[in-house]
Amino acid sequence: MALHIPTPLIHSLPLSKLAGIPIYLKLELLQPSGSFKDRGMGHLVKTLKARGATHLVSSSGGNAGHSAAHAGRALGMPVKVIVPSTTKKVMLDLIRAQGADVEVYGDNWNAADEKARAMVEADSTAAYISPYDDPLLWEGHSTLVDELVGSGVRPGAIVASVGGGGLLCGIFRGLKRHGWDDVAVIAAETEGAASFAAAFEAGEVRRLSGITSVATSLGALEVTPAALQYAKAQPTRAQVSTITHALPLKKKMLVEPACGAALAVAYIPAKAQSLASFTSVVIVVCGGSGVTVDYLKAWEQQFLSA
Image 1 (tube, helix red, strand yellow):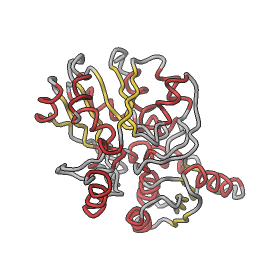
Image 2 (cartoon, one colour):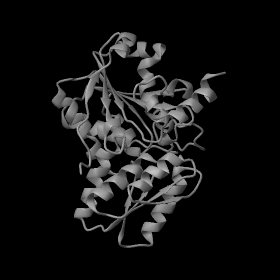
Image 3 (cartoon, helix red, strand yellow):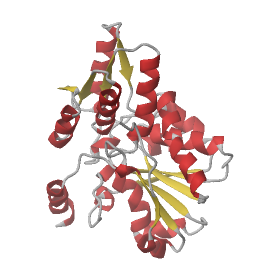
C-alpha cells in the first residue's frame, strides 16, 4: 500500500487567463487519504516504526489524523487520534474506517493536542505524532518540490494554504535543497484562522485568541516558529482571504475551504492580478477529505446567498 503517490501537475487555462500568466495546479487531493498530509505522515510514521515505536497517538483537526490512520494501517501500527469538537462527522467516519481509535476532546486543535501529548507522556510505549510541527513531516512534504523539479516547470511562485505550517516548511525545505532561492512562496489563509499572517507581520509567533473560520483544517492557534525562520531566507508573502472567497464552489473536484484559501489567490480577479509579476505560479491543491456536496450546499447558503 502506497504511503503517498506522485501527483499530477496540470495547467489551468481559466486561472491562467485571469492572472495573465501560466497557472499550474499540483493535485494533492489525489493522495490516498485525500490530502498532501500523506507525504509527511508516511515519512514520519515509517521512521518512528524503524525506531521501535509500536503504536501512535496523533492530534488532528481531521486531515492529519486521517493520514496518520492510513499510514498506521499500511504499516501495521495501531493509531489513536484525538480531534476537537469542530471536526466534522464525515472526517471522524473516515478516520475510523482506516481502523484508528478516535476520541473527541476540546473546542479546538490545541486542546486536543494537549490531551494527545499527555497520553503519550503517560505511556512510554506510545509515540506522539504532530499534525505539522516535526522536521520528519517537513522532509516528507518537501518531496512535492522534488516532483516540481522533475516536471520541468520552474515557477516564479508557489501558493500553499497554511494551518500550522507543516506544508509551508516542507516547501521551503524543498526549494532550498534544489537551489530555487528566488522562487516566491505565497502563504494563503482565511480570516479567522490567519496565524501565519499575524506572525509574519509581527516578526514573531502570535497566538490567536480562537479560530472563527469555517476552514477548520487551518485551525492552529499559532504557526510553528520554523515557518517564520524559513521565510526569512525565501521571498514570502502572506495572503488572507475572506471565507466567502475561499469557499471552493463550482469546482470539478471537491476540496475543503482550507484548500480554497490557496485557490482564491488565483480565481478572485483582484488577487489574481497581483500574480502578474511572476513568470508562472504553482498552486498546491492540498485537498482535504472533510467535504461533501451537502457541505458545499450548506456553505453556499450560509455565505453566498445573502
